Amino acid sequence: MFGREARYPSEVPEHYMVDNSVETVVGEESVSEDIERLDQIKAVVQDNVRKVQESTRWRLKSGAPKPDFKVGDQVLRQNVRSQQRKGGKLEANFLGPYIITALQGKSADLQGDIVQEAWAGKHPHVILAKIRPYKLFYWDIARIGPNKELESEAINAYLSILI
Image (cartoon, rainbow, N blue to C red; front, side):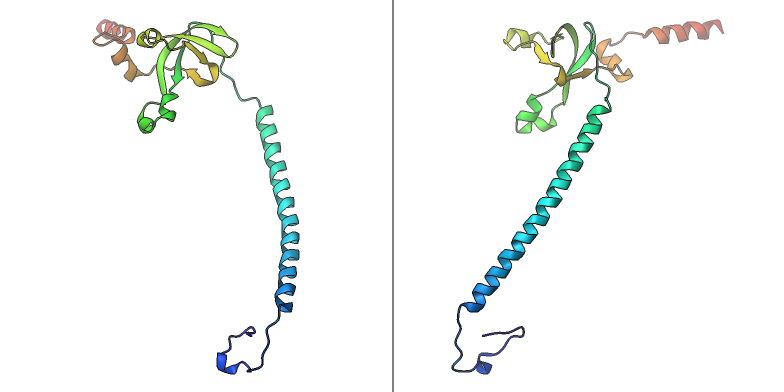
């Protein structure tokens, strides 16, 4: 009924018959094009998968430094609760510091200031992938030992008196 350019109904002949031959040819062409396109897409996908696998192999072989924990180290524990609750995204990502009391395979026993967790029946074992080393910064010192002079401050005061 219509070609590439639109026709007005007044331009179409009165005895024009529409048959299904055009629709079947167009359908067969689109199916064959889709099959060819599918083969191309599969080739691209396989190439992308191969590239990602190679980069993953290279990254794992590079040997990123793994933290080696010892009994007595101070560590931070990952706050899994912050990832599982609705408003938990605003909570701290890590809790602590905790002291490692025992290491068993991939788990560690932690001892911290929060004794309520033990009395509540929560298990003290933590997977090693969920902890990281704890670093003490100067803003933590006021929280740990309030109103106490640091050793370096006492030494500096003594040295300033001598000079």
